[in-house]
Image (cartoon, rainbow, N blue to C red; front, side, top):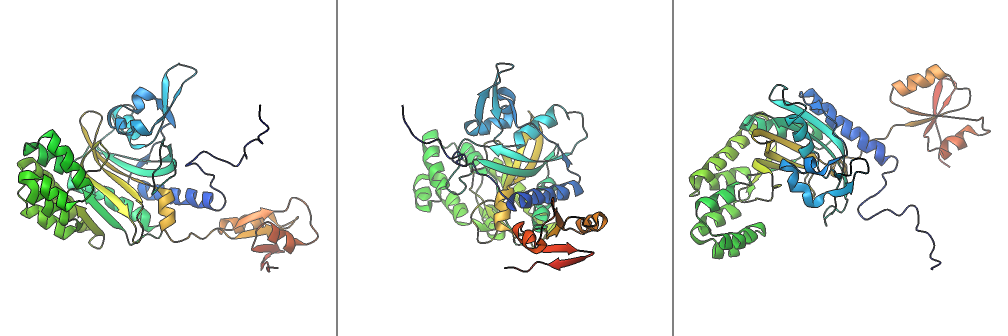
Length: 383
């Protein structure tokens, strides 16, 4: 038996945190601004549950999140359940079951919280917010471009107008290695070298593909340079099809947003395991964390789909600070109609619940910058 004091109730598990005022309100407003943008482009909102039966949550594309999924026993059915670690597989499930007869292409949007078993060095949070869109039932460069451009528009409304979109084609290198007959042993060593961007090791271990892979590895960066390297590369037939699709998707984006900064990494293959085509990652200048990521995948068994997930927490860290509502203190007996008019104008009103001798002091105590005096707004002087 010990006399250790009880843990501090404010102590939370690693990777979990409380979001306090005004950050919680700021995040909610940012998410709704994104969702409004998605809705304006025809994306209809769905709301999947926080947890599902494990066998359905981790089916299909959901299997990629198996090692990040918290599991628990449902006391009602005695079946294993999982807390979602990513919302995209849930949206895919909805599209292939409850909305299987809905007209295609199907445009769906979503927002919610996810929980993951592990964080990482760049992002230690294990609970993260997501807001995203999925375009299901169509496979074309224009569909790839729409996903990128709608996300860019949503971020621009939050003040992020100088974005960098990194485009990749995760199946390209595996297809090239498969068609070139690379052995599994050599492939594993080469994959590690490519993942570490080690040009010397790629040249040493690439065999007949050494020169091609080295050139592509070194071309990563500005889209024009990378695409030129892909055009000049000696690719196998299947890899050439994928390279041409990446090129066409870049052209489709530029046709509608010529000023958007695009980069291409031809040999990057670290997309989620369910990605089957063009993928994208969104960055802000001067920041290393991802603001969002997405790409093409197969919805259900055969249906083509693409989508992107934005991470509101990272977005708000990169975006210009959002101005909180001006708080106005309403003394006891304040005119209700005038207070309602202030709220309609965008002010936040804080009503007195009891008369106080010094309204200015009470307004300061409640973090109000103004108070209503009669019909006029009066600035509260700091002490």
